[in-house]
Length: 462
Ligand SMILES: Cc1ncc(COP(=O)(O)O)c(C=O)c1O
Image (cartoon, rainbow, N blue to C red; front, side, top):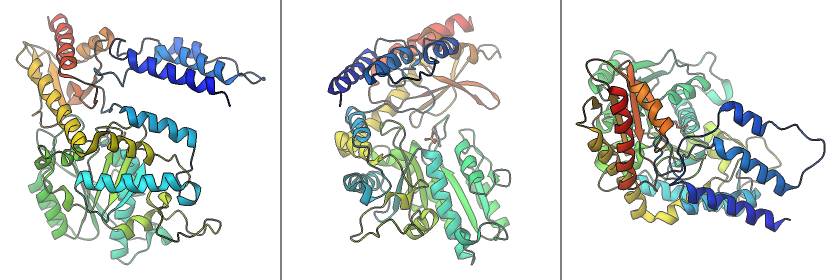
């Protein structure tokens, strides 16, 4: 064992984190440069581990986007808390198979505790099933597999045994602004993405509840309604009290995409944004967004534990796996994977580092910084904030006299390097998305970033 290798790696990591406030947020190297640097010949002979790591770090460094930078606002990418990063290192060193208790008792119990804390923080039923997935897409997959199980079981069909051929049709009713990963999960589950019924959205992207009501009245049979708290561009929240009531009235399973928006529930100040969300049947969220756990870390929560376990059920027929004797956690019973990373350890560390009030403060600070950014941009000539900044997302358009120059502004800001954010389409036209998700971001970082954006906008808008 080369202890010096681990010390050297820790130094490289600490130096990277230390450099974040100063280094350009963009990646510096081009694709060709990265291929040249990393695409070395595959040697016949082994290399010393330290050489591998030093050369890898040097070659990769110019191609790293500073997603951990306090001025990174791209996609919806959370920062990483110190304890969560360090716990993630230990997860690799311990290398426990996170599939079940017999392969790693501490990993299993840490995950059990982390899941209990997640339910507590999010205000969800304490006896719900919880699975820690790679991300929200697989959390959707897990929750919707449970929904598929229960809706078909209630219709007298055993989908796990008999598959979908000949099964009663399940209606899937989805908000028009649902995230792309919802449709991916539906495709993987054989529920199809083209056959879903889309409920129109309002101008912020929230589901039109009157339309949902009309659509549910218009048909019957097994049904799944998929709502969303936190639209990926605007942060808009669906009206959960009405949606869960309608789903219940029509005997439909209600699933919620709360990839980042569900974290409003962890803050007493923001909780009313997701009022009624606890009345749903399943919830998909991420720990690698607002909770600031390193990738990959998603969470699938299902009220109906039996449906959840039946839909995953990894151990059926595995005679070589000992049966649980004392209700110990077999993580694979709650997620699609069998063997997996013991990802509960980093979630455990993140929640402990923050504590209940720290989680609330982190979510509130991200939202306050999003409002600060909107206020700093709004009012400048040629700058329009398109959304009601209800949460941590800001949607902006640049241009005067009917011209939309947003794509050019996004490009110029990314190249300038003070901060980084990405573009999108809203109402069929380009817009800039600013997502505030990092514990490191201060009000000063927001002011500095807004100035950098406005400087590029002035040049571009003219
Ligand atoms: C609303 C919403 N749902 C789902 C996802 C997908 O999350 P993941 O990348 O963890 O699968 C995202 C990602 O940004 C999102 O914003």
